Figure 1: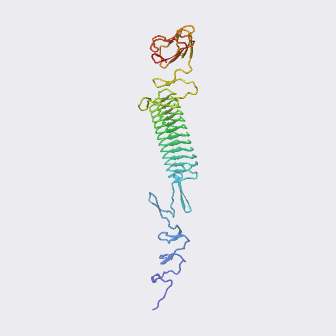
Figure 2: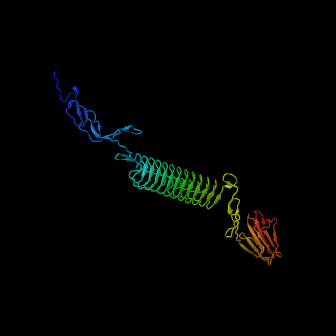
Length: 452
C-alpha cells in the first residue's frame, strides 16, 4: 500500500492547511472561506498593542499604553469607560462647577490640576468667580462667592454668597456667609461676619466685624466690632464703635468713640463723643455731642453736650465710686501761677467760685451794701467809721475779703453785718474790726457767715 503526502498537510493529518503565512504575523482561526487558519494583515509597529475588534473581525495592532487604564471610578456615579480609548477628566470650568479658576490641563503624558489662573486668581466654589475676570491676585472660596468680578484686584473673599456684587474693588477682605453682598467698587475694607456690612458699596477703609454688623453702612473710615453693632450707621464716618448692639441708632454722627455693650443707644447725628462702659450714655439723644462718659451705667443727661461724667453715682454699688485718685496734683504748683480753687456741688459737678484775681472795690461811704460782683473790699476809714452790709443770702462757699486800707480802724471802726441784720457772723449779727490795717476773710456756709 502506498501513501501520498500532500502539501500543505491538512489539519486532519496534523498540518495547518496553510501553504504560506506572513512573516511574523499572528495566526488566527479561519472561516469557511479562508480555511482552518489565517494570519492578520499586519505585524504592527514597535509599542503597538494587539487589540480586539470584536466578533467577526480579526484583531489588529493599535497604539496603546503599557498598563493601560480601562476605566475610572469617582466618589459617585460608577465607573467611567473610555470612548475611542479616551477618558475626559474635567472640573466643569465652563459651568463654574468648581470655581472659575479650577481646571485640568493635559500635555504629553501629564494631566495637571490647576486652581490658580494666569492672572494669579484662585477661585474655588460652585458658581464662584467668572470666566471673563481680568483682575488679578484675588482669592475667593465659597459657593456663589464674588460671581461678578471684573477688574477687581487683591481681594480675599470667603463664604457662601459673600461679596456677590463685587466688580472692581481693590484690597478688600470679606469673610462670612452673605457678607458685604452689595460691595462693588469699594476698597480697603475688612468685613467679617454673617451678613455683615450688608449695604457697603463704594466705601473705603472700614473695619466691620460681627454678625449683622453695620448693616446700613455706606460711609468710610469706621471701625465697628460686635454683633449687630452700629446697625443704623449710614453716612457717619470716622467712628469707632465696639460692643454688641452698641450705638445702634447712630446714623450720621462722626468722630465718636463708643465702647461697651448697648452703649449710647439713642444718639443719632451726634459727634465727637467718647463713651466707655456697658449701657453708658443711654440718655443722650439725637445731636448731643462732645460728651465724655466713662463707667458702667453712666447714663448722662438728655439734651446736654460738652459734659464729662465718670462713674454713675457716689457709693459702693455697680458702677458707683466712693473714692477718686488722680496723680500729679498734690504738691504740684501750677506753672502759670494764676490757679483758682475748685469746688464740687451737691450734684457732684465740679467748678470754680471766684477767681484768684479778685475784683477790687474802694469803699469810702457808709453803709456800703456789698454787690454780687464784689470780692475784695478796700475800706477807707481816714474820715468816718464804715459799716459793711453783706447779702442776707450766705451762699455756700461765697467769700469776701475786707481790709482796713488806711489803718484807722482802731479809732473809726469797721462794722461788718448783713443787709437785714439778722444773719449771724460767727454767732453774732455784727463783727467789729477795730485794729489798724486789720483784714478779715468771710465765707458763707449756706445759712450764716464764718470768719476764717
